[in-house]
Image (tube, rainbow, N blue to C red; front, side, top):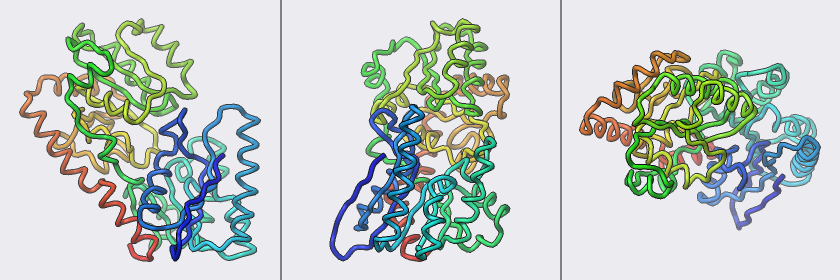
Length: 371
């Protein structure tokens, strides 16, 4: 767990709370939280944060939550903050609700995924906290119009409070175009192959199994596949790879830095985003792919459909449908370079709405009381 402070004079103070925050070992875990923190600091807010970094050891995780709850509650009671900014409010919001009983707080919550759309019994249990906090909050931030519709359906009274802000946007200093041959050389990949990739957690409903079934269907010896990620279904992943005898065709990375992932994107001919997770509120990884030379091919559901226009700035396949996915891949691989370049150019135009510079103004306007 981290307890951090950035100081300044005559600046508004924000207490940022989150049970997800990136670390060196897990650089993408809660990256949206760090993105918003950086935007606020760059716009002259004092940001104090109490956050939890990912840890797989149960006792350390339990202790981290205990410290998080205590510090959050303590700071809210004894310190003056202009805003309490809560990410993933289903769990992070527990001390906020309690502290608000003793001292009225100016609360802004930022919803991201299963804190609004439950995926298991635990999520259903904590959903009530998100909804209670949305009632107390002055603003409710969601990543997409898709999630705005869901929160309004669940809590119609919050309609006027809901603001769409796409998770801090895409940092063009990190995700950008690099010459494909340079990327292949950096990664030590053979330039004789075309590469199709999956970058994401190995978790339920993320679509890694759909990706492996697709790999099994594509027999072209000139195509290789890259998988970047790990998660709770690692054992299931390894079992399926072994059963389908795919080891020689897949290059697997567990954890990479954002800079290294940018090289992966630029080495890919196609980036496949096969998620069928209902709580996929935006799909930031898809936008990151669009910032590079990779052609984005996503399932046709949930968050990614808020920015992908099929055949214009990327492509869509029927969710969970391997035949549809394979068909779209062959279609993309058969396209001319000029046709692909048009897709990339259109992706750049789309990304203008997701640039950190533009979204920085949006986030500041939310904290200043405007939409």
